[in-house]
Length: 173
Length: 300
Image 1 (cartoon, rainbow over the protein chains, first blue to last red):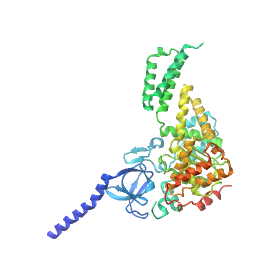
Image 2: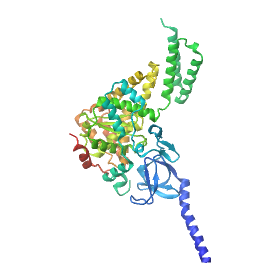
Image 3: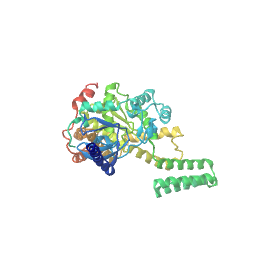
Image 4: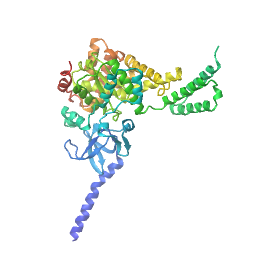
């Protein structure tokens, strides 16, 4: 019985000691923001399991950098984010222009909005097109260019096929 | 003979401008609002109603100018300019695969800019001249003529990065602000949102300014530097502007819209100085094969 109690105590101590570095790092950390939808990995490698995902504009505490990865604290765990996915400047809130909503968890947009797809022309632009007697095809062309939807997954696949960024392999930059 | 209301209006206008120049933007906004309130509450200061309305409209224009343009307003302006751009620049390239490929490269680079959340839109237009154009709100155009002169994806990434920088660092908005200063000095009726005739004039003049005069040299330096850095952070070999600039320098002629750009030889040196600050970039991908497959093989 005494051995069992001691084991529990030692286990509790080990758990507490494991948590300490994370707590200390949080206190020292710098806040950065997700440039886009950002996976947080449990290890500093591409195929490592994901701890979670940051939404565009969501803040995260950064406690250091090793190679091409930032070490972050996410949900009280240490995680890793590829360096080009975070910025030290909070991205501006364009949710009003896009129709989404701002919350404490970042900019809440639909997948299509987050892909940079706008719908239709503003009254200003419609009035201008009418007043300037712009040919209808030009109006349609603007609507088509802003409706071209590229999801985060498609962009990720595009990087993967090109061996860009995180998919280049190796570190050191 | 000078009529009295005009003289009073001119004096009030001069006072507003002097106030604006004398104090900071935030203070100017408050001061101009106070002046407008005084005029509204004491209409006898400017007895002629038309003159009074013009002065008040001018006060509103200065107030608007000192208030930062929000994203919705910027996008609306960008849409108006884009409608104008298509009408003047050319029809969109009909190959949706080429459009999509250019948009993917552009979005990758734009995510590395100072404004990653802006909904950037990219369009390839059918025009044999080697041109590219950035408009406020994230609307970016590139001609088939320019695409045909490039050899690899990293060159495209750096050129799109250059254009993205003009948007991300609000170079166009700064030009707009300057135009509003001019508008507030010479035309107190320039209330852009209510007077569609004035708004059309404003958009047409702004488009003309961007496409004929181009961005100022300082903006072009910044765009070269930032475009190179965005492409590097996106994972591309960041020397993609050099072949384009070297071709311009060798031919001795600037390419169309780039007539307003600084001397290519000077730009080459500046880009090289940026590259000197980056590490381990020579082994990054240029993706020439993908560019040839996705663009050069598809353009007529």
